[in-house]
Amino acid sequence: MNTELHSLEFRPSEGLGYQRSCQDNRSYSEPTMGVDQLESTLQNSERDVVELQAALDAYVVQEEAVRFELERLAVSCAALYKKVSSLEDLMQNVELSQERIAKLEMENAELKLQTIAPEQLDEISSAVDEIKATATQCEELAAAEKRCLKEQLMLAEERRTLLQAHLDELNSRGWIFGLGSFVLFFTLLWLVR
Image (tube, rainbow, N blue to C red; front, side):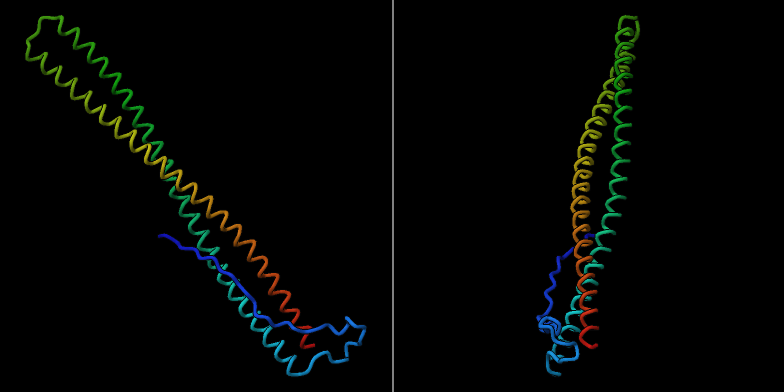
């Protein structure tokens, strides 16, 4: 399952157009804005909080998707490492088969020096050639498969690195949005006080 991750950008509405009453040494009891302006500011602030929370929720969903993709890639990488190890074992078996071929060729050469029927020599030669062709084919297939698996593994590692960087970015942005929600919440408390 391919997970498409879209970057979100949050632009809070331009609300928060209030002035602190303590800036010009006036008492807190002195009104700094009319009721209509205060209600408008509260509505804008509430809208900002809603939009900010929606953006934060979207980032949480993205973070969960990235974590899921990282876990899936970790499983894929482990499976690829296992396949590479199996191919290395297969190539070792091919090397052993080549040693066996060399031994059979030596035995074939010794048999040719003996007085045996030509039919037996042909059967031995055919068996040696068949084993040699099979071993060569196995070696070529194993090498090609190993190259393919290493390429897949490299791509998986690169994707995992990119996803980890994206996850770090989401964590950073989520912290910023969380702080923004905290500030807006206390701003609302201050306005309605």
